Length: 402
Image (cartoon, rainbow, N blue to C red):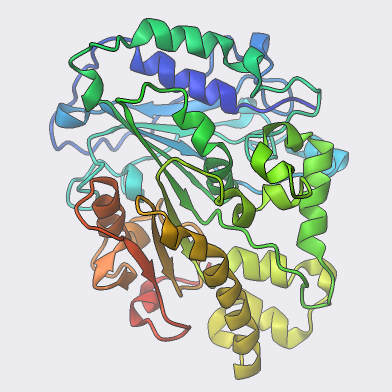
């Protein structure tokens, strides 16, 4: 099994950033053509490859105007593989091989949208969409070649030294938002500090995790701790321990340190957490996994929260309360932000309907795009929004069931 492709993702950004002036596109233009996939050069020599040994891929759309010095780097999601059979099966799909990666359409896709109306703060930024193909939140290292050691970063450190000069008048204008959704959201949390450390202090680097706050639910509906067991297999199979925070490992089991609840306690880089307190994926796979053999009434509930009865809603409220409690540590982090809504959904940054539209979910009369922008650019203090319990927020009704 192949090691992680995150180092290649980092190297990719640094190479792009140091490649000289960007060719501007028409200001305000919204490219409608799909963005081609590019493969990371030299990835195989560094061991930063997909599960089948192919080099990882990414999609790049150049920025323009005052956004030409700003970078949005997004890590794709797609679950995890916890057994050799599952990981082997991924090799024949886009989640395990770059051979199956096709062009992507950025237009109309939330934070990747080039339309200023729907994405006012990031529309003209350089956008990099990094494909996910290791099955371990960009942390897989099953061959014992830890990519987060001095070996994995040696070339990057040298590149940084050559790319940016401390007295460069342009350095302070360079800014980066490191994002990800689902398994990519967990990867954003997991690698946030390490990513930020690759840049000079004058460069503004912040992290933004969408639907990556996976809970360590002590018991699923059948009474088993199934999701912890699943994560434990991922951590063991893919040697994820090598990239976990040392502060956490000093006191906790490696599997516990793979959960965001523990990870966020030691992160120093400014971060924004976007999540639904009734995350549809977590309800369907953490609380009600297929292995738990849920009753028919629960099957209807897990498909659509509107089908849940009052007793079931109380169970889901307990999940919400666990998340809110786990996030309390953020209250002491002045430069962090969060948007925790009560919508039955998963991943909200990549869709216009949830990111920024007349019918987007709102908290404090602000949609997600507005709250994230206020946090990133420091337009508001204490950007920490938490929704009331389901079904109190009528703006959630515009979202289709997942």
